Image 1 (cartoon, rainbow, N blue to C red):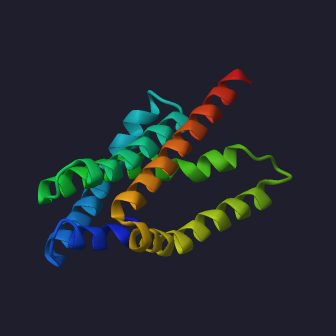
Image 2 (cartoon, rainbow, N blue to C red):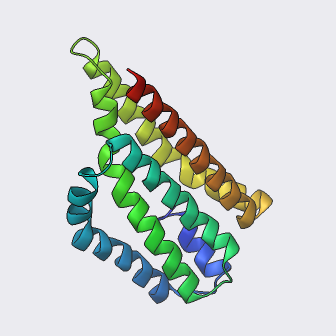
Length: 167
């Protein structure tokens, strides 16, 4: 949603212009370039990959919730983008590694192909679904649905983490 629905939302609901939205996107990129590797290096020493992905997913959900809870302003958009960027840095680098670690030599190719197909399908379908949901039910409903899916994913990652620690 960061590259499809969110810019439209920021224009329509926050009255940000293209330059301001571009600055938010540039902030996202700059924050990732400058801090991702040190952050990942530090956090890997303290948490498991599933815990890191869970925290990242929670922060992404929080970022979108802030778009609902905070009053529309440049500062609110900036705070939301900060949490979104940190969540992205925490979760995205580890998703394929977690999937790969759940395979064995016999099913690795099929498992990773399925992971890649579902990940790619989500990137194709979700922008349209987000915009359709926003058009039909409003941005607030769309963000709540996304926050709900983020929380559902958090519970799933927590369950996987607990299950992994029991084995």
